[in-house]
View 1: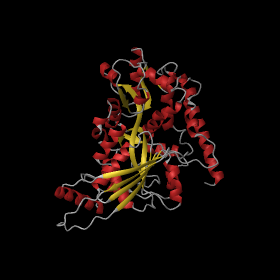
View 2: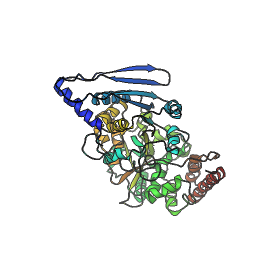
View 3: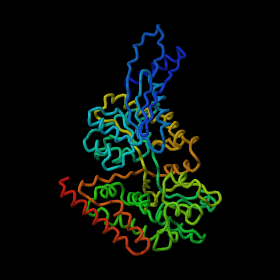
View 4: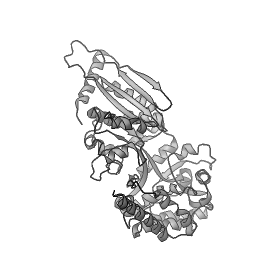
Length: 475
């Protein structure tokens, strides 16, 4: 994307080299319990009187940022960097853990921010509302254009599978309205040291997975455990495994609650393999009664080879006991074919630009800038996490722990792609709790009290209720 801001950037570089000036940025911070507002005041570099270039146009960019577990250090740093590299640009940042509540009335009043970064998973959230109202700006051109370094197309820098997902292209027409921020892969956590010492290979297929279970039994270990009383953790196995077996189309039908989407041979093949874990003695004894920290501790002590989890497990279990030399790593879920695609469930926050933004072109330039190596490295330095770029892991390496670096290595495995959860919004009159209907039966399945077929039928009944409620509501 070649726009006037690139020309501005080139002008800044020329002025700096000629005048030896640096752009000093001062931030005025106002703190309350829930909101921080930063106005970065860019000081324009003195212009050499012999320079015939036109004066730089002053521009303001208003950004709204969700302040989650990563804090505000990254955003303060990247705003400063953007201002320093874009002469005449002033960024006004509002950052808060409740950013949705802050910007909702602004949007209604016709004063939408130019750029939003929001962890918006609630079904009544601001971003979801804006999607419903077609109030987001299409940003396909940003990804079709060049990356910030000018070395290629930006879309080619993004991890496979994300831009095509409903998380970024919510209308099913491949047009991009939301941009991926950070990624958090979730998969089979295992002890890399143990696998290396025993010469074990990460399983590709379900046959490989269960064959490894036999080796584990011979060594006094279980193949698998999970966060027992919180069976929802098994979404990290279920959804990727279904996509592995039936592609994204199979998941798409489930996410729309279509009839027969959960009770068919493709999905049943996955449910039967999950049932087999319990029925054939591959599950760590006592798993179904454990909580998340108990099962995770047992796995780290060498009681089982695998547990489903995400990259947060390292910090969550920082003080937990573990077997000697324990080293985190992550594998993708098994598939049915040795050459098949393996999908990884990814948590992914998003960037967006409201259609009503007052400065959409500068917002697009800011978005493009966020994927630069400088920005990606800043994020890792201040958060210990990784941007949704293919090179993010290596660019961030010096700022990542060995555990996080190893777990992000899941994307380096052949034919691995990301998926995100994109369930259709429930009708307003619906009382069905989808996650409970899907995952609560797992305890009975693992205990041998319910078959895979019965599990599928119970989910289909819940989906039928959702469709009935939707029809009754006229939605």
